[in-house]
Every structure is written in structure tokens, then in C-alpha cells.
Image 1 (cartoon, rainbow, N blue to C red):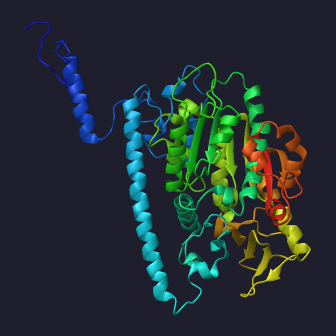
Image 2: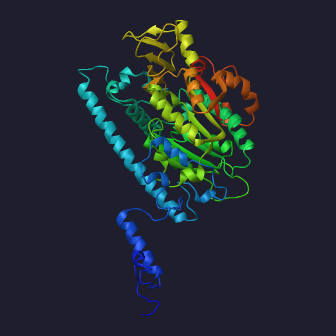
Image 3: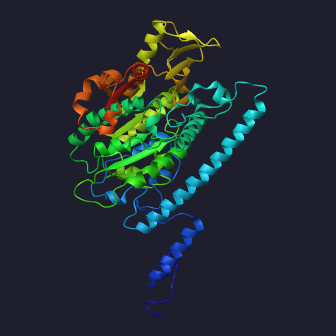
Length: 497
């Protein structure tokens, strides 16, 4: 028998025991691989991984051990070929196709949403005779129109809130909010337009003051990467461009919000890489995923769609969670899962930046007896823009024990429509963060942050944003009901050691 043969032999049968060698037909081998991929649905190779399956996914280890694969980022990794959901890798046709599919998907979702909305209206009409205040436009103050260009303030339609879990309520609330925002009218006419500008200014200040420091101090890192937990509709994408990041990763429990965030990023992404950042464009790569960072771990949410992302991009420089951490304080396990995600995702020296309702604010309202009893006898405080209603009578000294599960119902006009939230005792948060090697570096109330920092940012921020902060006395900042509503929040920064 000759030493070689042109006959194709499967890979498993090559190098036989009798020493016969075979000439490999590469085309036939590729065909065999393609057929195998088609049959199994598993690709042999990946953009992000050199192996067929990431190592930690081959068997089911303890969840915490998945983070043992977190390591230093590869300096040789190419930004364009790492983890961009929308990166076309030079294939504009593929990008156009993705955008087309996205538009069709959104149209289908809107049709389903309109159908569900109509059905819920019919259900409410059937029950009005039995429960006269079931209709939200009667019972819910957030449905009152502002009177400006027929602007419609946000209203949610979530039935049976008392018997539903918090995740279900939050997901449906923000899904509906995302859908309805397209039909509300110009945001300039929102009754909380100035309040939104104030909150956005605070986030610009926090991310700029504490995010840029990370980049300046980490010259060895090839990428400036940000993990945005509870990213919503991508409202902080502009802020990430403001601090000149290289890589963005957004995760949120609301699938509709995630699609909206991806759509926003895709429309404004810089299509060509240059030495200078394009103005009014996102000059960073981004990927988005749907998941619950309070009950799932980051690799579980990212790796299925972005294999190898943990090895390539983590640890990141910055983790941000804005106006969402309070949902985790339903119980201690959720808080610990969240802090595991934050700590394991951050590099040493990286920053964790967030905003939450202030436990000091709660304490002051309670101890000063600045509350009243509503028609159901529940403790409540607030004004025409926001309200807090406790499920149970709060402690007289304003100190919540135990620190978890202290639920209240929060309403913010045109934004949060009677959604359950939980008190976040800040000292409990600080103590738990220390267990995860996160040390408090900064904490201030929103009003104090604004007053101390706005002089440095007045000429740096977008003119429309600044103009939206103008008060009735021609000064800048919050006033009246707005000042109390923004004073409800505190900003903080922790550093990974």
C-alpha cells in the first residue's frame, strides 16, 4: 500500500495503528465541521474564545467559582474584535441586516404591547362596577396631564401588585415605561424635566470625577471598560462618552429597555475608527444583555451570547448602578449576589459608583414626624412630585432593624408609578461592601454634590442640560418640590482594594 492516499478519512480515523498516513482533504474537513455545527447547534470556534466551550462552562461548578476565571485583560486583544454586539467587523451589510431585524422585532413588540394594553383596559372596564378605583386614571395621580402640548405623563398598568414578586413588577413597569415613552410627547414638556436634568447632572459629576481618575491611574490597561448594571434604556451612554471610555457592557432585567439601549447605541455609534473621537457619536464598543444582577452572576448573563468575554474584558475599571440598588435590599442574599458581581468584576483600584435613596433622609422624615396617614392608615410622606408609603409603620427612631426587607411604595411623577422599593441603611451597605473589599471613598446628598461641584462643570456640560436647570430666580439648581425630591437621593463611590 502506498504511503499516502487521496481518499478522505474522518479526523477520528487518521493516524491508524498500522502507521498508514493520510493526505487530509481540507475542504472535506471544513464540510464535516460545518455539518457537525449545523447538527449540534454548537460552533467549533468563537470570536472570543479559542476553545469550543469556555472552561468554566464545561461542568457546573459552584457559582462563586466561575469568577476564578476573571483575570487580567489581554493587552493584545483587538477592541473591534472583542465584545461589541453591534460591531460589524467591516461588514456593513451584516449591520444593516441586524438593524432591520431589530426594527421588525420592535414593531412586533409594540403590536403585542398595544394588544395587551387594550385587553387590560377591557378587563378594567369589566371590574369597575366592583372596584370603582381600579381604573388607574382615577386612582393614580401620575396620569394627570401637564397641559403642555397634550403631553401624557407616564402611567403603568400592572395588576395584582400585592401578590406579585418584586422582579416581575419591576420588569413589567420598565418595559411599559420604555414603550410608552415613544408616545408621550417631547420630554421638555415633562412635569419633572428639570428634576431629570438635575439627576443627570449629578451622574455626570460622579462618573467624571471618579471615573476619569481610574483611567488616569491605570496607564497599563489597554481599555477603559465600564460595566453598567441596571442600565435601562441606555440613559448613561452619553455620560460614558463624556468620560471617554473604550468599552461598555450594559445589563438590565427589562428586555424591552435593553433593546432600546442597543438601538440608541447603534444609531449613534461612530462607524469609523480615527485618531480623534468623533463628535456627537459613541466612540466606544458596546454590548448589551438581559439579566437580573441581584440573582444571577455576570458570567451567566454574558457568556451565552458573548463566549470568552470574561477572559477578554474583565476585570473592568468601573461598575455603575444608578437608581436601582435599593431593589436588592429585599433580602441579604440579593445584596450579596450583587456585591459579588461588582467586586469580582472590578480590577484592583476600580470604582463602584451608584445612587440610592438616602437612609438619612428617611430617618429625618420619621424622627421629625414629617409624615401623615393616608386613607388606608399607612405612613406616608412626600409632595406633588414624589411620595413614599410604608407597608408597615416605620420605627420611631428611623433606624430599620433588621436592615433588609423594609418595603415602601415609591411614586415619582412621570417616572416611577407606585413601585415597591426597599430602604437601604447605608451603614449596612458600607459594612457589607467591606466584606467584598470595597472601601467607601465618597458619599454626599444630591443637593450637596450639586452645590459643591457645579462651578467646575458649568462650562463643560451640554448647554441644553444646563439651561434645563434654570430656576425661577434665574439661578441654577432645584427649587420647591423639586429640591425635596432630589434631596431624597445620595451618591456614593467605593474603591476595590
